[in-house]
Image 1 (cartoon, rainbow, N blue to C red):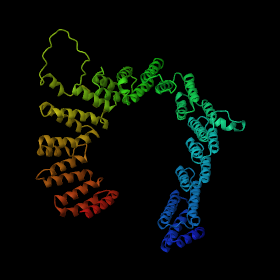
Image 2 (image 1 turned 90 degrees about the vertical axis):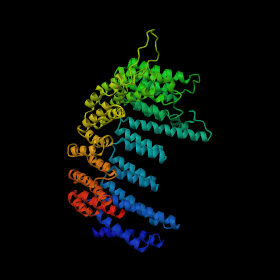
Image 3 (image 1 turned 180 degrees about the vertical axis):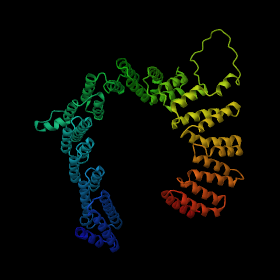
Length: 616
């Protein structure tokens, strides 16, 4: 082993001598480099090879190369680059090759090697690396695409990129992803050639001499069409054709090709929702050849296409695609007033037919909240929504708010019946009685959502509503307290969330003594919550004359419950004694913390404690 290591180090002597000769490194630094390299070489010579050893050695050499470049720029010395910089770069390249040969399944090493060669601008090496990589991982289409894109876009070799994609399609004849990329790259090459001819003042029309027939095929995009025609054998739905259409729209000379793709979608996949969605969205695009068609006409054509689609394909997906398009149009300030009522109508139809998604329903209700003249009652929509999506906490929260606030939309027209209006009830009568009762929708929401974190928003909505009423109404005040008491008895995470909040509410509304009583009664009852202890401590410290012994009892109780797994309790206790209590107790607390905390936490505690002492 030592003979091989010494041989490797002897091969490095010329570059090390040149480093010292051009004064990039001192003699001591050269010795440090030699020592570090010897350690790495011994690790690589072990019988059992470890991937991390290769990676650490490579990273060290890359850092060394970066340091050399920084020092060259600093002192303005560019001598002996082949003997120093290139030698180190070649060594890194060889180590990458050894690592990929030893660990061929690790894709990160391959990609790191490629990235290193890109930075070194070794294009020929990148091509060879991709060939080796694809020989090992030929079953991953994304790697074939990466290699082809490199050849087409960065190496400037369309022939190599085309060859790679043809080989890839032999391995993956059903891959739409590969066909799409081949289609895109061929159109990209055609666009590049057309722009070049335009710069040279040459025609891009297909009337070239016979000896330029191959170029003619590329200029017309015929090679892209060949890939598209082959891809149709693997197409199973309109969604597979959509990427081809998206790519074709990026180029201004593909009008006929786009029409072909549209025609294939309509003929072969006439009952596919994506086909109709694509046709409808295409109707919104402005046709440069039709200057008479205005925006309103395009919107109407789009919507009529969707309506026809719904008559033929009455599925949830079709409705949802329609609604998605309407919401996209709504983002345009000019179009928004034109489609406002249409959105309401379509969403209501989809909801009644149970074909609206939960997120679309949320978006629609947000729209209804800001639209007082929609003609649809928000509360009615939400009640129907929670029936269809009983696990959606956002809908339950909105429904509860609507019921609690009794937001009934007024009718658009008032009809004079000739009957005298009855006197309205007083403000404190029936309306107030309704507001202070917990509605049935609250309990339905809690039952549907259970004790999950999603139900916390429902509890908070009810508490916030009755809290706003509690200053003028004693029943509402009692309702808030009842809600808090029920919430803290629920299993985590609901109980954990509301326990400190209940304590803070009691302290605010009933005072210090009641808060302490609540703490004493609930501190040891499940669920045990660390923030519950912290909250009573914070409340006590805000008092003009805090009870220090009571705070110490709280800390001791918190330590008994959480002291083994949480170092922050001990640090807080120590900080309390130093700032408010008796600093002579700190030593005892420090010793107890070391003995109580788990070993890993104890080491971290000592580190944090040392920092705390330095900051004091």
